[in-house]
Length: 321
Image (cartoon, helix red, strand yellow):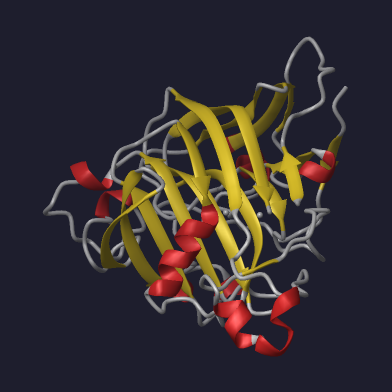
């Protein structure tokens, strides 16, 4: 049987870094998928991170807040084999705000350290900037930020309502991030969403409702538009929003002054090979991020706002070198 553990950490998420870590789960598996619907439930994946059933306790719901037994029954994670694991969710269709963000977590995630994620954190800087800034010892300094390469393949089944799937990248201004450390910025890479940016209804402009349907406006979920870029073989719409407004309703974020930067792929996909450092460097070139901060953790999962569905991961890997 696959060992199931419950991590004692805050209930919030997004949504989401040679070191080498590939999430290739152990070959031995039970005949039927193991499941957990505990809102704090996790399946330990050893040094390769863990799959977590992370919930937000139903913030910003149009109806009554879901807690306790109701929250537990609304979503679950499962592990079947090394090519079949993921999560299910089921919420009312009229809910707004993030209900949950089940995800694979690698590195820091409101944890006391980096969860055995190799030589994380990864310092961020422009090409040759580190060498110039440390000219007295340039021979021992890297001239380029480490590449953070990742790939994932997944399927989304019978999904309804409002959701977005992709990466959440945590950034800290210290290399000693701990359980109480607040990120200085967050970067999201949205690979698929219920309302793709290129097909959203143009006259939707209700900036008070946290929903993907509003992301085309400059004041809605994803925030202010920073234009469109072509990175890693695809086009991405880029947005910026203050971290406090993005995490509205979560007291843990009320004093945060950083930004959430969101790259929304203009066409949905269920399989990507990305270098996360490419996106970080794009923001550095825009002077949006601070050089010499640190990438502390990466998540891949789904921000669920309403409706139901299932996500099945068939491949996952991440390396930083």
